[in-house]
Length: 325
Image 1 (cartoon, rainbow, N blue to C red):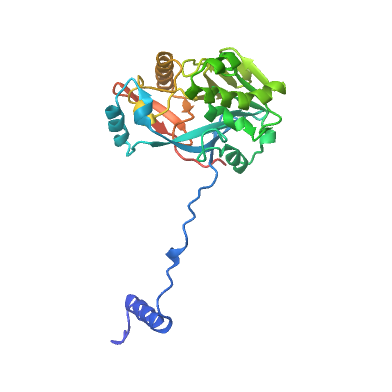
Image 2 (image 1 turned 90 degrees about the vertical axis):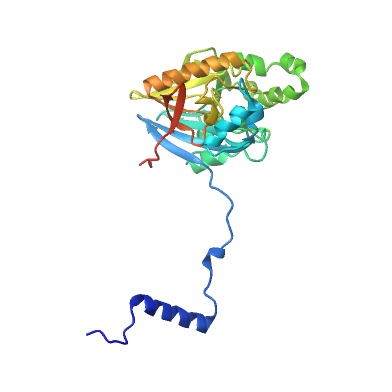
């Protein structure tokens, strides 16, 4: 029989807590540990048939999207951003993609290294965190020669990937590695040429740069496809294994919150905005119809997912998180 003096569990706990405070003073506050304020190097891995695909984060960069997007207005841009709880400048991902085919280790783009400021340049750490070393990379395929795609080829004055062959479309190489084009470029555009030259020329001199021209199978299962417009030789890459496809878009698009809903919106970085828009519209339509996975440099990391038609435009569906066993 329960005594009338018995304490319930809750009452007993409060009694003991009161006694502890009376004896030792205040209860320790474990939540006052200092904030770490850092994040681990970023990588995310999926399987594509027999291929292992690893998305590598180079970091993010704040872009004043309302000032950069063209064929629209700042007001429309801000309205589209607000739908996704975004404001300008937008923290914009820079992603690279590592493909292990089982016989070749292929890196698609290399990030910015030191060409775009202190918030980028982390791809090398992400690569190492993912279990690989730069020396293991066999081939590097460049979507185009803007600094946030080629800067990571160098580590100071040393080639960051000493055993790799670097490949890119001839049209981009002819444009960005041309001293004549550098000389006649406006002052505010010369840096783009200088960054490309500093990143690529050491590989050229070492005999480790090989261009291709348009649609080209580079290794079994990975094919370059011409998608010119953003730059003169912009390329996208089709990765395919056991009937599963991944299309890596490079800079075919930049701002998901705006350009999926309205693919006609362009960006000031385009060499030929009309051609870039046409390539984007073509790529969106094909990806939505065929249902294959896509990845892009400036989609929020890991930048992998699918698109579907929605209204007059498209909607982005990030991949579901699944640990790779």
